[in-house]
Length: 263
Image 1 (tube, rainbow, N blue to C red):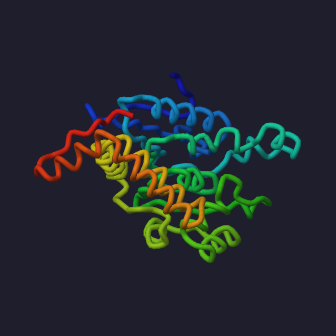
Image 2: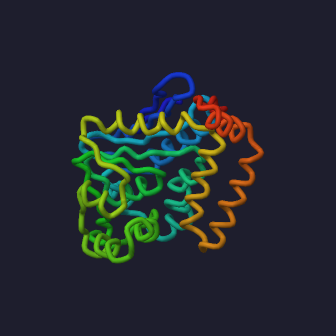
């Protein structure tokens, strides 16, 4: 498809093909408007449906992953418009429908909606110049794409309150220590590192990768007993797959497994 606010490409060969999506509104610091979020959702679903792609990376540029929602576009919105049009829910939540792992590769600022898009991803890899924040309180609103819900689950109530109520921005090292990001890498190595992680994931069986993602996400949305039950049922189900037989036979035989890497 011809996109106007994002760039898409496929990196890697054979079973290690990764869909790379680059947010591309550099003059606006990748501010997130409806068009960008529509196009991001379309690209995510297209890569998710592509059997030749095993993982997806979302990134921005060296200055901004995304500086937040486009305030210029939404400053004249009123309740009637946002409620009738299902603002945010209509297109921001598309990422939740993606079954393949999505990695955020964050350099520069990830503020407001930018931080929330990163939180929607399954893994967040940060450049050493990355900065995260939820500054919505400074313009008379609150985070609206999960910042008051996913952020406390990632870093705890006290730290989330500090960021949401005081407009505190944190750097990459602090974000890693708090559990917001999984690893920090030099800025010039960010996309290469994210692609390497994605290609590592692509080397495993598609069914077990999707099941693992579902199970971990369930941990955030259910009581422990329910999550354990769900995990157990997925484990039982995976014993009915060719990948389970191949993986365990390869382990016992001391050889590399040949997984079915198509979704």
